[in-house]
Image 1: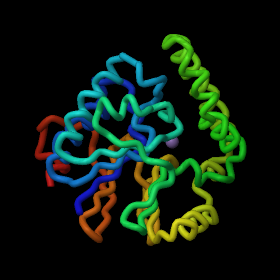
Image 2: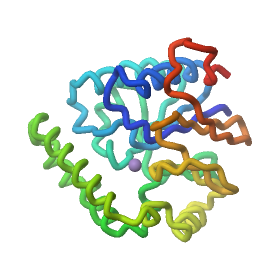
Image 3: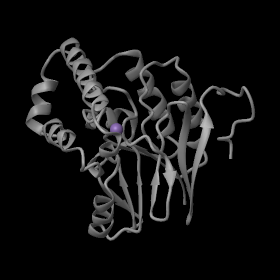
Image 4: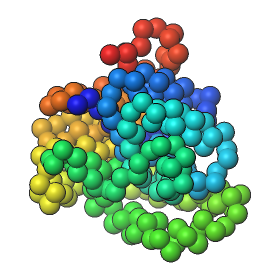
Length: 241
Ligand code: MN
């Protein structure tokens, strides 16, 4: 089984280095791996499946193409929890619950549910994931949703600036609880922007200074870091394996 796991790309602009690298990654890996898992925050903001922005339109094309040669799974993050079945149907991708177990022992999560020290965020998360709140939002016109999305982003940035960075990391006890609850021995998640590979946990990195992915080849897991600047054959791609 050959899989890759990515998260926190925060795609926003089709001509950005991260978007161009994502296109390259999807083209290369979709023909070589069995499954691609996008563990949340693929985009900076998702305001509904009816979004016709260049970002949303380009994503539909890329994901549809990738899902024609391998399975592509999407999990919601805290930026794109409004991605719905309509988008998944149009792109041939499948939405996963958070958390989600694969191979009976690998637990996948976006990772925000692990940040239990941040009580303010956990309270907001309950609201954002409430189906009736989401329905109310999705009934608003696109332009209004976009404004609301930007306001929420600004609010969250401001709130996070005043928080101790440690409360925004995954809580050790919650990690252990989740592994136990799901009878898993490996947890793969993103969200915290603190990439790392540990005995029973792999944290995929945010695509900021560099890109990140976790590659699984049967029983071997490897966290890989790569440049976002080199894309479209500017050099022999690291991804080309
Ligand atoms: Mn996140």
